Image (cartoon, rainbow, N blue to C red; front, side, top):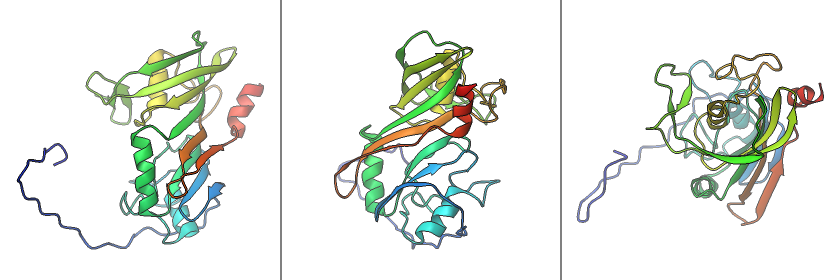
Length: 249
């Protein structure tokens, strides 16, 4: 078990199963590639695309597209349904997502996620006027006790930390930059709703559907150390059309 502590002098037997072929089908789906080499590929994911297959979404996912684009050149650490996937973003969140093309690169990138040396910055449109120019939201997140589709701030949840900075204020909403220190499910969406400033268009945490039909959240900027070359890598994805349109109105 994951929580079992090892003891000095104990013997452990490890059985490594034979590799199983991935049952998923490659699909020719256009991808916007921000960067690619023999070890990593960075995708600017559009809104509405599910990252990996799951119940109700066995095709049309980013993984299906990656299997077509990369062939066998994807890491297998996360299992058959998530080849290459180092981290995830929600279906209706747009922007940058990092993919590993081999297990060594995946391990190095996962270590950067764990020790917070990989920096991921999002931008969002939050309902209301946030008065503080910047701040830190340190509030644990767990599965919502009544609604299993939602996450919530709970005392017994996992630690979740979001750093935010106000970029601009508009009538009725605020343009905010959020930097993740941890990566919990729905973290920015839950934290902003917890503050009283839910995201525009977030059907799950905010009934306000006035401006958009998806949460106004975009994976805007990413920095990491290349797992092979050691080079500092930095990428920015432009604001998507639907969020830009709201800010121009």
